[in-house]
Length: 446
Image (cartoon, rainbow, N blue to C red):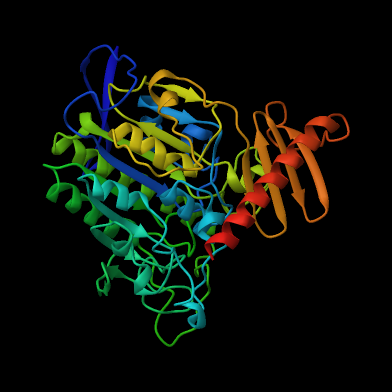
């Protein structure tokens, strides 16, 4: 079987075919004495249909496509939230975001900049890996608290470089209310450059500096979140000026394409660096999105967009890559979700912890093409509730209720609640039990 590796040349994105060999499945990624490196890459507002390997015919994403060819592509991967903050809280804690009290977006309003964020009582991915001998770094978007007391460096990350708000101007690095938002650890720094390129530059430097010891590298990209700006655009958010929140370009679809392609190119630079440092055979890479796309993007056949609990708001692309450890070209239909990533990464790294998680370890999906045991997944956001178990999904929007069989109806076009009342009532009861558990937990911990 031919094994191909990913890398990026200065003149463009290229693919190199290396030798041949047999790829076999393994039960655990830590059979060798060397701890694997972990790279977690998350796009922002990238829809289910926004990249080529998920069916997009306009946007070119050769690196992500090749990553999927060489790894596992998930067709039933979900974000914990329909917006940014909740998913990021769940990702880093391995639990439903409701446990951390971060069910909604933390906004940039000045009177709230010090009023909310990820509490120190929450045990994060960074802290667990840090305690187990890993160098840890985050390069990109944080969005789990504006005040310095919520900084990633207080949550287990040795290095932080990027911004703390929901989005910044890709050129001037100013947030949604015009404040400068570009950080190195707990200090603001002033520099020029396109956000996607800058955070990749620093991520590559982190890899270089820590090439001789295991590292956890978290790269939460801004792309393709608005403002819609390509590399060659001017800054829209400047001091003392009003600005269009989503950017001044009238051709947003073209800008959107440029942003995703720039992100794909920069992910290629990460793979190229792994190859250069000879770390590619001992590094696990996972790519995902934090929620579905806005209307400028594509959620494929899925109904709804970001902020909704229709499939288009929460079902997103996800790809895992680990050469010679996972079977190439695998497509997984297992129901997986953001909070599953932490327990899975701990399994891959051989890290044992007494901490309990709502998320499930899906390493069996990666290495043995297994399915996660059937379990319900829950969502709650702004007068919307949803639960999915197996192929069935119950959705409530205000007072309207729906039941869908997603295996037969991925577009949620046919409500079948009248035909399957027992399934409807079972899912509703499970949702009620989950809500009671989350509400009780918050009352006990507050």
